[in-house]
Length: 321
Image (cartoon, rainbow, N blue to C red; front, side):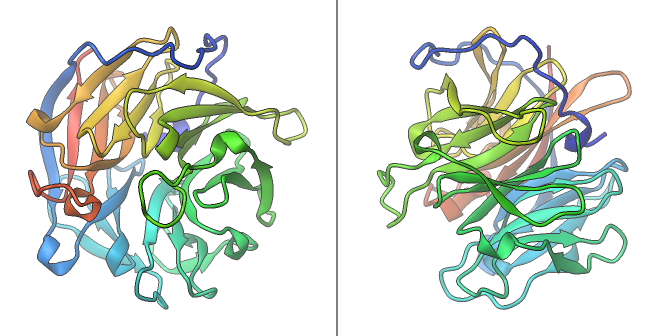
């Protein structure tokens, strides 16, 4: 079961006031499995992670412009897809998601207009094709499907969210100050809208430099409602994922933590350095046949300038409820 099937309604989730979140209080990590390790000397730094219905795990190696697949039950990454034309300083493929047919989608940031945008990698061959209109997204970062099949794209530099309706072309869905970064991280550009995921009626966006999550209602006609701050988190946040109970899981690369935000506002740390985290950038939540949850986490490691700890890898952590 993959993330696109877990985007269920948050229903009557409690609106959280800015500043209402306190420091994480509970450790709930279970058994940790290292799905795959990567060689930083070769520039193998995984930023995004996604899991298909067969249990195959996909990771984006940003600096190499590559997508790799780790088949279910294996620990050996294999080349799956790539995008060419990257220039020095490009971020390459970043956030990932999969559709019901197992095709993989990745946000790609490049100075080359022929490479920039969101790409679809065929489930069988890995062949890459860019989604129409996504070349206009300034910094396509993370991607996530809504229940109607629309693909939502976070634009980190533009402080916005784009939408690709089923069978359509990309359109600017919403632009708002709440989605903009502050520039405080010193990258030379703002790190705003980043991780993204959707329920049946709401799109949730993590805004890295503001350490908050923004909720954007999905109107009946598919248009965007007014963005509001859903939660203020204790640390800068990168990738996010929802589960079917309305919890939001967040990767905090500078704190080396993954947290779980419950609808009632409680924040729990589900994994940290002792569980093998090293600059976690993305998180994927998968539900097993018995309903048990597993968090798949991408360790971006030294790509974030943090000291090399566990090193770049993909982890799977069973979650104790």
